Structure formats: structure tokens, C-alpha cells
Image (tube, rainbow, N blue to C red):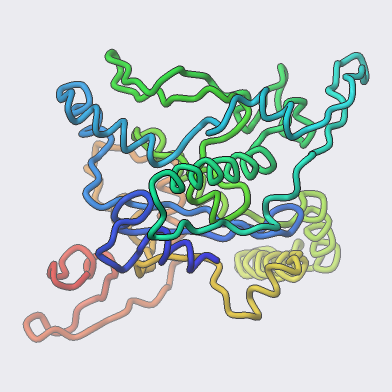
Length: 380
């Protein structure tokens, strides 16, 4: 399914245009939910895309660019239903029991869908020789099919009954209900794009993507530096997120400490060695206690990757660069305690120095930092 998304809908590794335009690059990570099902977070770079600042400047300075850009943006994703309002579709496709009071709060009555699950059907492809009248009728049925998918899978619970409320006062972590706008416009003061949205309880989606995938999808264009930085943190959080519950985590730590009390009593030169050994035991015990769901285990056994990308990434040895930065600071400039602590503990006293030979300088110390800084540009 992911390969179909990449090669059929996004047209990666081809000169053809995908549903968002030409795809210059992509990176997607597979996440295991609390219910152990898998889903994909995919970041796409569009060919010829401008930086957020360049987009803002051109939107404010070039009316023709503004018109074309907003038209393209609305073709990428939609925030509304295509065949009617949310209230009209609810009346047609859903039966809802009377509201009730629970713990002093009004709760909407239980709802029952009157339509079959859209995921159990397939999208109909229009014939290439279809007359314009038949094509128009097919498009109406296509939008009706997409609306059923969005109604069944993209609509957020108005009572927030799925654990989305946080804080005091309470707020929805999924940011529902969404802010509404009658049309897509550019804020002339800030350059921000206010996207057209008239349905407060559904996320933005692409109709073609929803019709082909047959389940919940969420499509967002990153139009500001803040959004770009936020999505980097968001994807990194999913890549590194642990599947272990907090109470199980501390239970494992407690068990390791109880079984290795002799390591806690070490002193002198043995103290550093005991601390490292204890940390290794923590990591091994946590790795052994990590739960992996059936879908993730099956995907691994079938050889499916845990991420998708068209780029090759190099290892980045952060501590070496951090140490080099601290060492090269001017004498009067004091680094933060965090930098000093990390740089100091990066290389213990007595560590061996890696040596290499040079045709001009003889024996020289090898450094990954210098190798990166001074290597010719033709070597990435």
C-alpha cells in the first residue's frame, strides 16, 4: 500500500506529476499506536518549492502568484465536505439517540451509521472515453464516496470521548474544533494563509488520497518556518517514542537495582566502571521488556521497512562536534554548563588517540570533525 502511494499517487522517481506536483524527496516513518496498529507519517518535498519566507514575500508582492498559489493549495487538500454541509450529511447518514446528562455534563446520544463501511469498497475508475455528461455524474458519485470516507473516519468526536482532553482548563490536543474561514485568503499584515474551512470537526484531506486509501488521512501544507520546525520535532518524537508504559519502565529499573546492589556500593576507580555497567543493564532490561504488537512483528518478518525515504543518511557524531565547538570558543566566552559537561565526559582520561599517515605531514591524529570540515565538496 505504501509503495502504491509513493509510485502511483506521488509519482516518485519519475518525471510525472503526482497529486501534489513533482515529488523531489520524501521521508516517512511507521508508528505503532497504543492499540498496536501501524500507520505512516510522511513528509514530502515538492519540486521547485520556495522557502516559507519567499512564499510570504511573493504572496504580498505578486497578485498573479497569489492567485495561482491559492488555487494550487486548494487542490492539494480540502477542509470541507464536497456534497453538503456536515449537518446535512449527519441527517442523511447517521441516526443519533437523544442527548443525556453524565456527571453533570451534557453528552450527545449514541450514534449509529446508516451507511456501510467505506473501507469495504473500492474506488471506481472513470472510463477514458466517458462523455462529459457521464463524467460529471461520475464525479458527483466520486465526491459522495469521498464524503462517506471522511464522515466515517476523519470526523472528530464532538464530546472528546477518546482521551484527547488535556490540561486545566481542558483543551483538545487534536485542536478541535478548528477555526472556520469562508474562503482562502492571505492576511495582508502577516502574510499568513487562512485556508478555507467550513467544517470544524474534520481534518484537512486530499480527495484522491482518501478515495484510494479508504481510511483516515490528514494532509497539511507547511507554509511557515514555525510549522517546518514543529514537524521536524513531531517526526523525531515518533521515531524515538517508546512503546513502554511509565509504570513498567520504573518497575524494570527497580528490579535491576535490587539485583545489582553491589554495583551501587562501588567506590574509587571502580565507580565509573560500575556506573557504565549498571546503565548497560538498564538498557538491556528495558529492551527485553519492550512490547511489540502483532502488526509490527509481522511487518518485520515480512521484510517491510520501519521507514521510507529516497535519500541515504550519514551518521552524525554529535559529541565530537560539540567538543570541537567548546575547544574553539574564545577565552573570554564561557560556554553553558550543559556544553562543558557533555564535552568533558565525551573523552575520558587515558583514551587512545587514533593515528593515520599523511604523505606530507607523516603521522597525524585522525578526526571525524576535520574529515567533515576539510573534505572536498565532491565527497558528500
